[in-house]
Length: 128
Image 1 (cartoon, helix red, strand yellow):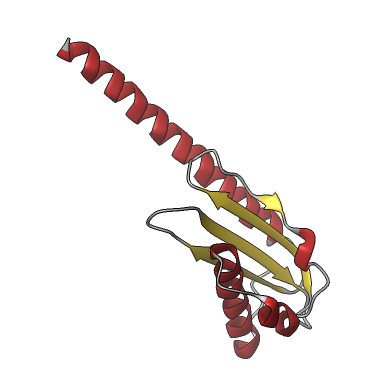
Image 2 (cartoon, rainbow, N blue to C red; image 1 turned 90 degrees about the vertical axis):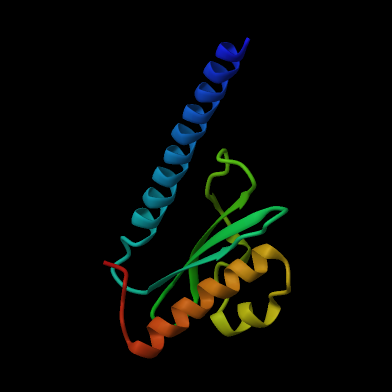
């Protein structure tokens, strides 16, 4: 009886590790794809929840601070993947920041904006 329990537990644990690796591969692939722009800024924001749905937001702007592309991953499982989030495309960072609320997705986008603003203040360009 206990032997089967241990085998099932180990199999589920290995499956979870494999799925987490696949999700990490998706994260790195998305970052690499979005950072291939010749110029502009890239910011990543993460909002973790102890209970509930977390979010990871990626924003790419041009040199003037206008959102060119954004991606969003939200969910509580390793099955979550990045999806295009076109709602904010074309907005300046100031306008976008003023429209954000207190939802986990909004807080993730706010963190991404803060990282882009820090890059702009330092005059660094992370897009290679």
